[in-house]
Length: 116
Image (cartoon, rainbow, N blue to C red; front, side):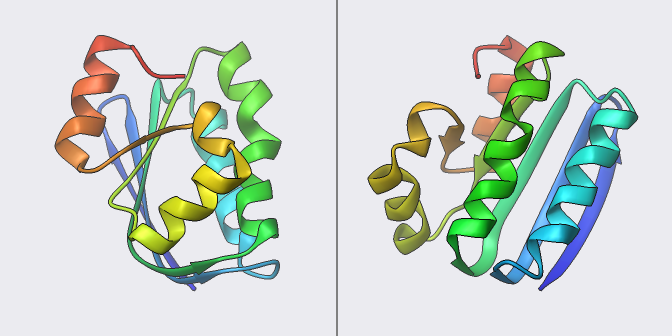
């Protein structure tokens, strides 16, 4: 899996490419922790190029939920393929993590602070 991070003002945008499994979840964990350490107000994760996510991949987001909510950092996932969005829906994670269709929607939510 490849991961690219962009910092824009108070937003951290993480682009995922490939498969998010147990071994690559470490990269995502480090990227999320780096955004927390930099006191970003918003973390947006682009799933457009992600082909697969394992339980460990979902787990990496679960691991950070408490700290994100405690520090009032907005987390929004977007551009998910239907098969990956279905996994979040079936596991119920869509109840705890904000998921939208586009980056534009994600940015609008961050401006409104209505997610998480």
